[in-house]
Amino acid sequence: MRISEELVRHLAGHSGLEIAPEHMPGVIRNLEVLEGQILLLFARPIDPPIEPAPVYRP
Image (tube, rainbow, N blue to C red; front, side, top):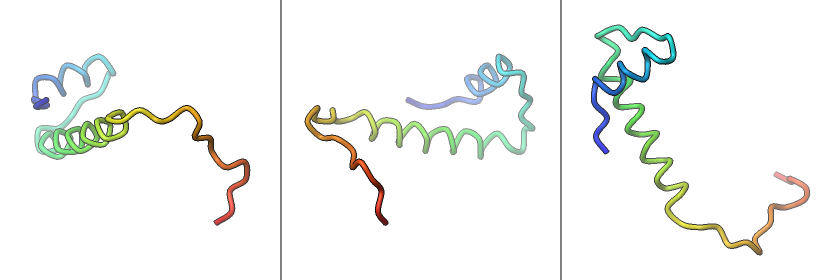
């Protein structure tokens, strides 16, 4: 999906935010990166038998 300036302004307006014109390209690029990460996260289902470790040990 291509994230447009119109979409960003629409979403920002609903959130009560104003985005300066000089920041718009960076905001759009960051949202595109975030979208890519979300697609990776939901691209493959997680097997139900896999459970997290009960204790974190670095």
